[in-house]
Length: 177
Ligand code: AMP
Image (cartoon, rainbow, N blue to C red; front, top):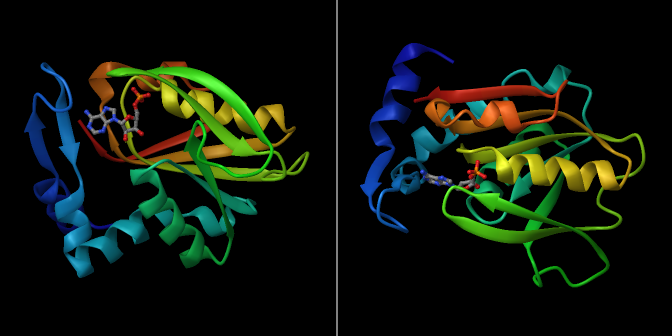
């Protein structure tokens, strides 16, 4: 990914102060999505190097993660796994409770989403405190799968989220703050 493309992405991400709670600066990625060329460049950046990662599926987190992870899976010709908020998946699930930068939640994945030994890659829009991504990795572990790595469009480095992620998992941030 060249610097000009990264600069365009960074310029398009909109900071929204005090959303969804006072004190949070929300990274709004909708301007990136609204620009077709930029959206394509963003998917290029997120998919970079993943053809060689030895993975069979890409997983995405409800809801903004779906937009990026689904497109990356399609770009790579791989399957897609949705990790959803509690109560949204129709079949049997594994569950995990987790804390995020502004609240608490339970996330779920279908029991047949990952086979034992299967290697998957997680894609999400923002790495903040790391609780969400760590919990999603826990779901894969519950099913005997392996999270080979994770790529985030935005890494809020000052929150130290990487420290919460499982050891041995490769972590990539495209835009780091
Ligand atoms: P965390 O568990 O703290 O790493 O939070 C990551 C999740 O919460 C991601 O799925 C993001 O979509 C969302 N999130 C947390 N903080 C922000 C933020 N400042 N701007 C946008 N999304 C955020």
